Length: 322
Image (cartoon, rainbow, N blue to C red; front, side):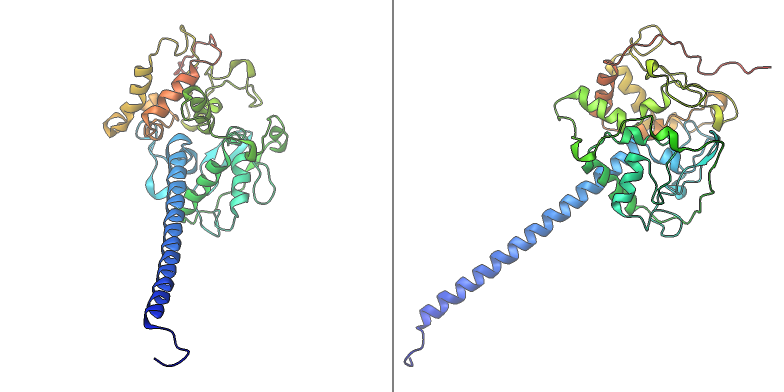
């Protein structure tokens, strides 16, 4: 061995240390990448669950086949919007696919969240509150961005939405509701079924359809969940939403948890909706809501048992006026 050179054993030890450090570094990077991918997948799946089931976003933002009960979504139209609503003029649901020309492909995540939870579009316009952003404002920040992640995964659909034609500005309605900062919103405790149900009912916008409204489309605040909101604009004949308060005479006060759960679960079978119901059709997105987890349906039931009972007998399909 030459003078000044390192012994072979020392060289081997140094090489081993360098190899170990390299492996540890690679292992750490690989582990972080796996965790990051797992987190992204979890967020995407949570967004899918909220959009496709609890929030039933596609029942307004897609074309539906109303030759069948509850109008199952036509898959090729998912998220393309363009559904007309004759309220205070004519409104159209937005294209929420990531198409860059006619959808939300050029929107930032924050801009999409602002529209979902505050009702303000990218250009600053106020959304009409048929879009229940005042309820979505109650969701956690993580859930809001999970929805964004899922919307970005949709197939882009080119569908230019007509301009809305309102009889009066949409802006004033925006100030009828209170808004929270998403940073302050927390998901409900996992072991609290009532708070979980309350949270899911908000994400589902249940109050929007199951609360009667005044002639100027404002909630009758003493009748939350009391039913009786007219749903007939879509069909050309009148259908009214059900009373889902725990009133025993006119609501769901006599429903058991099992009967409530079974009602939803029945629509997991295509045979339950693959028929033409005629005037017994409904806008209620049973098919989408039926895909919720059993425990989430039970949680909504638990929450609805706590709301104020409203005595309001709803005639769901009133006779036509001659």
